[in-house]
Each structure stands twice: as structure tokens, then as C-alpha cells.
Length: 162
Image (cartoon, rainbow, N blue to C red):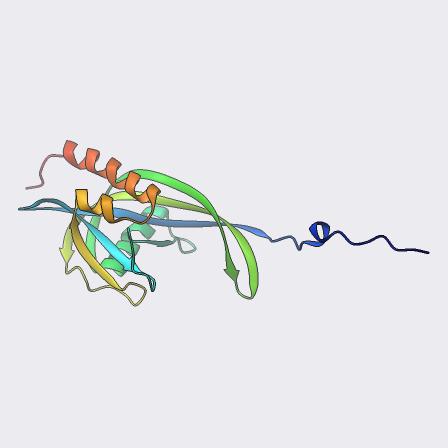
């Protein structure tokens, strides 16, 4: 009895797929130089991005956005409006297994209320206020640049807070 040769393409182990939901936001303030947004630097290559993180069990995306902005920048901010939800896929580890993640990130517009930027948690290399035009140029991800563009339009339509 002869055996059929094994085709390597048929042997590929199936990688499980998991949904993952994060939330974050464009936290802004008005200053003498115009509108500034809070950006964070993460990772060894100092990638600039918006503050965001996983939505915890029992937490709404809105609550997570406010919490993540506080943890990753050191500031308290008031949630004003939903900006966008971006979606993408990536492969990573969950425990000791490789997993394909279907990621959803909810972005919100948040107005600065109090706190010192830079009083962030250990996950962040640096947090700083950046003029909104420069922020768009410095962000590493297209979806986040689009969220900042939407935020800028919304901010320009808001009355200045007394």
C-alpha cells in the first residue's frame, strides 16, 4: 500500500481568530498657539499614536476611552462625541498560542479638563501636547490621522468653553 505525499499547504495549522475591542481618543485643549492634541509615544521605535487600549469586561467603550486617556497621558478629559471606529486584522500571541485578531478601535473626541500631561503609566514612553496640524503629520497610523481630521472639524464647530 503506497501513501500519498503530504502537501504542506494542507498541513498548515489553522490559526484561531478572536475579536478584540479597544477604545481611545483625541484629547484636545485650546492654547495660545491654537488647538493641541495629546499624543503618546510607545514601543522601542517611539511610534507616535493616540492614547487607546483594550475595553475591560463590564466597561463601555466610552468609559474605556476616558480611562485610557487618563492612564496613558496623565490628563482628565470630558468625552464629547464619537469620532470613528477603525477595523483591522493582525496576528499576535494570546498566551502561548498564535492568534489572528480582528481588531475594532473606537475613537472619541475628549476635551481637556485637568491634570499634567506626562503623568502616564509604564506602557508609554512619553506623552505631550502637539499642535493639531503637526499631530496629523506625526501619527504613525492612517486611521488615527483620519480620526484627528474628524476631530479638528468637530472642534472648529464647537463654541470656545468659558
